[in-house]
Structures are given as structure tokens and as C-alpha cells.
Image (cartoon, rainbow, N blue to C red; front, side):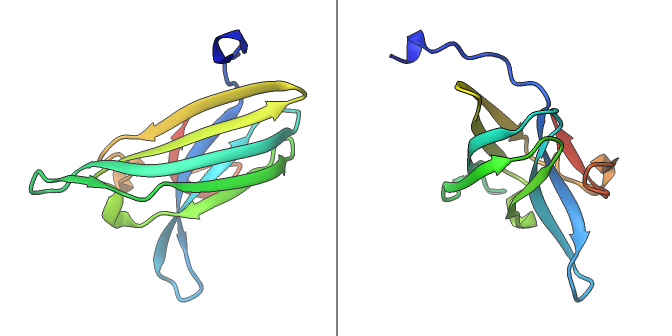
Length: 135
């Protein structure tokens, strides 16, 4: 049963939304999972969805996307997906679960509406890009 599974706190795993230039010089945004630990993460599952309200107050929800990464090495990064600026006004939720040895870990990372903006960009050394880091 779920109540019998010990869920330890997630440490050293973060999400980032980073701004980049594509091959024709246009600005694009990508979502990354960063493993800042000295050990590997295995069987990593990431679900992503957006939800909230449109500018006129009507409810809006995106599709749920699922991503699987068999192994994320120590101090490595995985690009999860591209994210369209047209959903930055929504809550953008990333639910990450993974195993370390036989222990399961999970955490939700939620980028709140209008938090993914130029003014909030910081340099993220592990990506060598500017972005929004969520710990």
C-alpha cells in the first residue's frame, strides 16, 4: 500500500526552464531536469501539464505529457520538452519520480503563472544558459 512506502525528501534534483536560440536565431524555451547529486537516478518519470485560466477568465488546461528517462547520470542534465510561451500564463506542473537504488522519490515542481519571464532569468551553470530554476 502507498502508506507503507517511505517517501524521503528530494534533494539535488531540480527543474529549469531555459531560454535558448534555435538554428535560425529565434528564441525558444526548453524544460530541463538537473541531477545535481553524485549518484545516478534510474527509471525517471516526468509528467507535465498546464492549468489555470485564460486572460478572459475561462478555464484552460493542456494535455498531460509523459516522459521516461531510463538513467540520469550523476551531475547530468536531461532536456524534457520544449515549452511554448503561450502557456506561461498557466501553472506549469512537472511531477518527477525516480529511483535511487530501490528507494522511490517524487516531487512536484510548479512554475506559477507569469514566473517564466525575462526579468526572472538567472545564469544556470549546469546548463550554461539563462533560465528560471525551480528547486
